[in-house]
Length: 428
Image 1 (cartoon, rainbow, N blue to C red):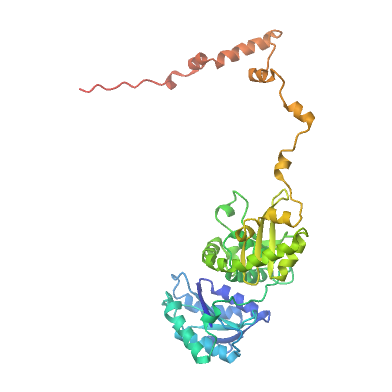
Image 2 (image 1 turned 90 degrees about the vertical axis):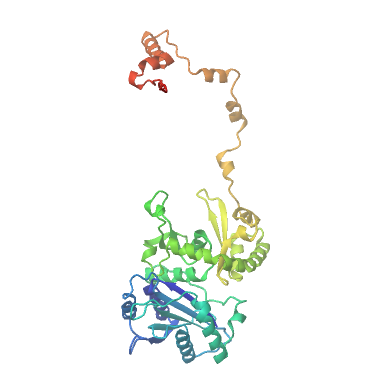
């Protein structure tokens, strides 16, 4: 059994995520401790109101949402009663036995697991200490339950990433936009190993969700604001974008940066398998085009996203592993797998911007561009005005020439602007 603990400040977001899974038939509520009779089937507003009763008693606490996922091996054949007992026993052993909590069983992955939603604020308004909770209490509870129920030990699960069900792309108008986007963004945020905003955006694009940063110089860009929108099959925005702060998962720049820092190690572990898969796909797709390359990657649970400049030139390539939930630039896997080189390897025509900006001159234009003998000297001398034929022009030129002389500039300068020499004081 593998236990993952996370703290946050948005209990409503956790509720929306789990309740949406229930609505889709991918999860069920196993228990609702502290919610009274009928708590399992209560609407989301009632469940949130119950948690709010506790969190409102300590508004100074920055983190008041407590979330745990208990993940079991596919070899652990557990029914609902066993999972309910494990969740209850685990919460008691980590010091949350008296707290209201909801236990959801999820069936959206190839391994059995439960999500527990609770709060670390007590009825009296005190904050339950969570520092080193995983090391001090969670590990002991995990080992005790593994021994008691004969579960597969976490140490035996560490070497393999637990397989997950693939996400489905959003279809605009089929579901409520905000809820559909929130489910995709939340899943990508918590399960994919990305280390840059570009990589995060590339994964979202696989599910028809676009990331918006704002135009250069805009207040949104300057304040690191983010928004999200549904995309069509060609990557064009549909509907009105929604701010990150308005979504349940709150995928703001600040939260994403923290995730990206934590993803560094996880990403490195998944790159070895990606490298083998991409190399194999490239070998089978040489000269056969991008579409064939994408088909070969799909067989291995991978996907490629080429990046284009405004001129249509390929300048980047991102590889996404949907099986191990890892994403990185192709050049991180191998230096020879840049976007442009990969496109050339696949037999695609690649635009050369340098040739477009600086075309090879023809003989006629080349001769015209070579200055004739003495022409440079004339350019340095400037244009020759034949003023002797025009008395008016001659008079104007004489005035202009007089104004640009150094002595004329000095005479034209006001006396109060002339620099005065400072007299040194004599020491007495």
